[in-house]
Length: 319
Ligand SMILES: Cc1cc2nc3c(=O)[nH]c(=O)nc-3n(C[C@H](O)[C@H](O)[C@H](O)COP(=O)(O)OP(=O)(O)OC[C@H]3O[C@@H](n4cnc5c(N)ncnc54)[C@H](O)[C@@H]3O)c2cc1C
Image 1 (cartoon, rainbow, N blue to C red):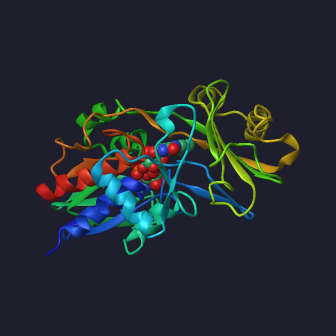
Image 2: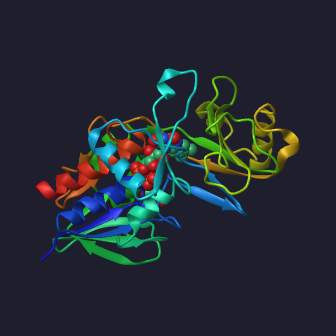
């Protein structure tokens, strides 16, 4: 009989873990509280405009992740993006989704058993099996669990479930920067340099992207990411005012009279600024296999999420 695993979270780490387990003959169910898959690799529509409002691109440093990137580029799910700035650290090719970053997790989720709108609210042991209960009142059972939520959400779940208290201390070491993202639909092209992205060094804005130049939006549109300091200080402020303030800071990049409309999204967890040094965390205080993974482990970012998801699956397979 096949071993079974429930993966909490259909972001890149959860989807990668699922593929690795299935390759090794496991049966996997992925539960995600969101409406769709991808987590922070997110692309939003507003009318005809499209925006990458979470992750903007990824870099590839390790051979395995480079091979993954090449495979999705060959399938036309992703493409190279040659971001050039004065800073030499920006001179190598990045990778973006051909129709937005969410293209990549959507592709990975094809043929997987992913159940969305399923927020896990409790984990317990039931007759040697693990039982998971969701907010909707549904119950799932399996032999093992991989939890890939951002660590504060994992802590909340463990505390409610009254399990893995020793691991909570390690999960508390992981911290994420918040990020306020503004998505503007425009009447004219931005002045953001080709190929459509710029990091800013001063002020309240860290990054501005032109989704039309990136090739993901059929109409002119831009994404602004506020700095962690600004996002933290203004996280609960009025969103319309915040959007207006941030847009008015960069008239040289986005002309004020080109702005047709805008919306604002708050990411409570964006980049994992402080991470757990290992690629995943295996619970020693539960009788059943419970592994924590995600971009809060190892090298962080999208590449770190991929490595962490794969490591978590390999830990289970080893047992
Ligand atoms: C604004 C922003 C900009 C970024 N820019 C970049 C960038 O340019 N390059 C880069 O490499 N990285 C970037 N990142 C980081 C990158 O997006 C993440 O590192 C990566 O997507 C994390 O993947 P993950 O699978 O670990 O987590 P996530 O994508 O967060 O997936 C976790 C999933 O768990 C689900 N979940 C949470 N709690 C529960 C629950 N109780 N029950 C069920 N499901 C649950 C969530 O809905 C989510 O889908 C950025 C992130 C943000 C937000």
